[in-house]
Length: 468
Image (tube, rainbow, N blue to C red; front, side, top):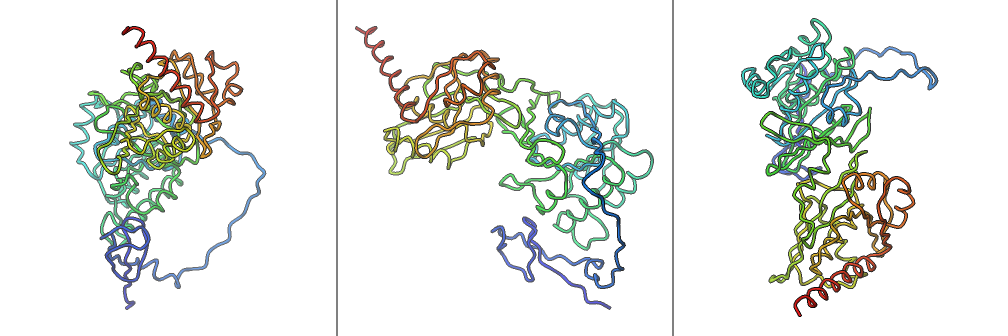
C-alpha cells in the first residue's frame, strides 16, 4: 500500500512547505499553515495514461460575439461589461454584512422574471433564511430555484439535470467541499478543487456562475490567489457602515473594462441603483467652508465628482499627525513635501487631516491638485470657489501634469452646474468644444498657492473695510 503524503499549505496565500511553521515565509501571516493530505490522483502521477493529440487552429477565422446575460440591474451590468457572458465564472468578494447576498438575490430574481432557469445555492444559510430575505425585499414571487448545499459534486450533478441554467450563484466558495479531496472545507485544496469543478461545468454547459468569496482583514479575497486567476472576472463589493451607498468595483474582467464601478444605495427595500453618483457624493456640500475642493475624477469609464476635505490645524505634539481617509497616505506625504519644497509652505508644525467625503476611495493621481488646493485653502483660511472643480497630477518638481479623459471630466462638471475648472493647460485643448466651462490653467504648485493666497488677502481686506 502506498504511503500517504502530506504537505503544509498556507491558507492565506497557498504557499506549500514541507514542515509546519508559525509564520508563512511568503505572505508573512501567522498561524495560517495547515497540514493537508495530497490527493491520491495527484500523487500517483506516474500511472497516468498518455494524453491524446488535439487539432490546433490559426488566428484567422470568424470570431463570434459572446452572448450576454442581462440581469436587469443596470449598475451590475455596467460593471460586468454589458452583462454576464454565457459560460463565464465571476468571483465577488466583500466584507460580511456589506450586501453581497442581497445584491445577488435581487439579480437572480430580476433575471428569473425574464425567463430561463436561475439557481441560488447557499452554503452558509438555510433555505428559510434566504426566503425571509427574499420576502423582505419583495422577491418571493420570482421563480428562482433555491438549495442549501455544500457538496460540490452533488451541486454539479443537480445543475446538470434538467434544463441548462442561465445563472448560478454559489454563496460562498469557501463552504464548498468535494469527497475527492482529503482536507477539511475552507482549506486551500478544497477551495481550489471546488472552484475548478464549477468552472469545468460552466465551460461545458454554457451557464454563467457567480462565486461569492470571503475577504481577509485587509480586504483581499480569502483563499488561494490562484482562484482569482482561474475565474473570468473578479469584483469587490465595497462600502462603509456609516454610509448608505455601496460600490461594486471590477478589478479583472476578460470580457469588459477593468476598474469599472457600479454605485448602489442600501435602503429598506434592498439595494437601489444610483444613476447619478456625483450628485450623491456632493449632496450636503458646504461650499463656503475653507479646506474643501471638488475633484473631477474618473472611475473606469464613468466621470465622478467628489469633495475632498482637508483640515490643517496647529499641533501640540512633537510629531504632527497625518490622518487620511479614502486616499493613499503615501500620496499625501508626497504632496506635503512638494508644497513645502516648491510652494513655500511650512507644514511641519501642523496636524493634517484629509478625507474623501462620502467614504469613496480614490486611487488615481489626478486627485493631487484637488488635495493640494484643499490643503492650501485650509491653511490660508479662505474658501475655494464653490463653482470650481480641480483635477491634475502633481510631479515632484512641482509641475502640474496632464491627466487622461479631461473631456469627460469637464462634461460631468458642466452637467452638475459647475462653471470653472482648475486644471493643467492641456485640459483646455482636450476638452475644447465639449463643455462650456471657464478654464483656469495652472502650471505649478507655486502658482496654485499664490492664487489661493491672493484670494485670502483680498477677503481679509474686504473684512477689514467692513469692520472700519
